[in-house]
Length: 107
Image (tube, rainbow, N blue to C red):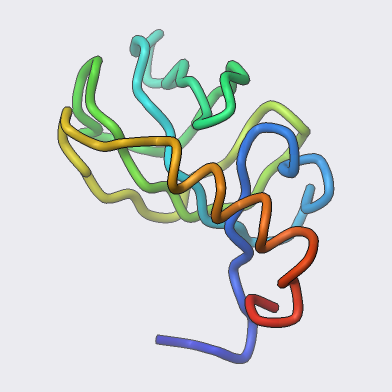
């Protein structure tokens, strides 16, 4: 694992702070529109993911590592299927802590 360039944990709200920088997030797949995934972040924002060929169908959760090209879109570099039984609440809490009070632990 390359630790020289950290990948912050983000949710839909904090994604805008990292446009153009590598991030890590967990989203729930809603649908696939011609190779572009429409997903929901752990805090309820609708996002799009490009470059995730072979990604599972709804309602699977996936972890995505990639570079946001806007506050609502990520260009995926890799993804991991977390299945259908994933609790988004703890991950969303982690994102809040990682972007605020305990930011120094994650960056």
